[in-house]
Length: 552
Image (cartoon, rainbow, N blue to C red; front, side, top):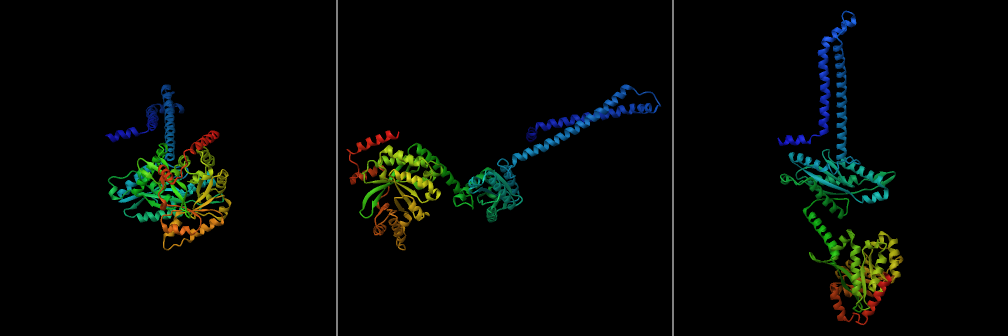
């Protein structure tokens, strides 16, 4: 009984009204026919005899009733036909509306609304047949770049072509769903313990989809990253995971594939979800940490290797998280870049570091790493100069470190930025030299003041198989270009001795101690007599106040 009530409630009221009108019109026609038969049996013979001149005129009342019956028959029948046609047209319109609601208008695939129910139905069928269902989440690589370079019409052509290729490659009983934008989901039934078949199917799909797409004489190359999840086999049949959950798992695996280089596939594994959850927690923690001032500068000593003299510090970021403790930059810097808070974080750290460095002896320098994303900011140079004016720190004692990767994104913008900073007296160092693709022409054209040898090359000197020729070559290159060299990653005496014989080099590394916070650094400098005297600092403060007033 409850099922019957549910079905009755689900019936469309418009369909009920149309059916009732059909019955009324049909009833009128049938009643008119019955009356016509009854009336016509007595009137028609009279009409015929009168027409042939063999009898009196027929009864006018009955004759009029007969004519009325004929009119009612014609009206009722035409009305019934009109209503029947109207119902048919409405049914076709409703089917078309339902198709539009369930299908993506561009590719003809199922859409985000109709996809999950279709997956549920496919899984129920597969379970009855002793099968699993594999979900493939497909995302086009660099689709935004395709749109930006070739226009949205070209992007639409790529989407429709890829949808057609995916559909043609998959079995007939598979589902293809456009999740949205450049994302598709596929559902494919397969036999238990036959994941290798799904792997081969996916590899073939990646190869087929990656074929060039032609649009108005332009060849567009599109690749895909695929994440896969499955229903879990016999063990999960009693407690199945929802279709939306399966799509979510495949989505996690797809992003894992993108992080591993794109144009490839990965199966979902539970630890991926744990990593994603931890990543989201880190993102939230970083944003809260910025609000709560949890990011602090630490300082690593820089030493003149020939004399052993302390000549400066490199500022390194540390996150004092109440949940995770002291977190190294290798964990949070890349995330801060991805969520676009690296500029805010870096400016806050530089402001603190400049305030700390104002207390140091004037012979000590401060080196600061700059993210490639910050160099895309056209106002970065002005922001940095404002921080210098605000703190009163001399620009000549500040060294900005940029990586080789910055040179390949926009050399013109980097040159303009570097020149602007150089004009203010700030020094520029090329960090991690040797790990990128810097050319000699770039080194000559860009006004660098120093090269920093990447720690991976420096650490090789400690190996018995390495003789340090690569480091020696970089040092020789620096001499030829009149660029002094800094070696980072000095961790033992063997590396130090090898570097000492290569010329004038500034070095840093754990051999000289771990990076320290501002308080420990100040104590170290106090012990070495490298803090400004008390009578010097008020003048600096007054100068900083005047510079701040002029800048404001």
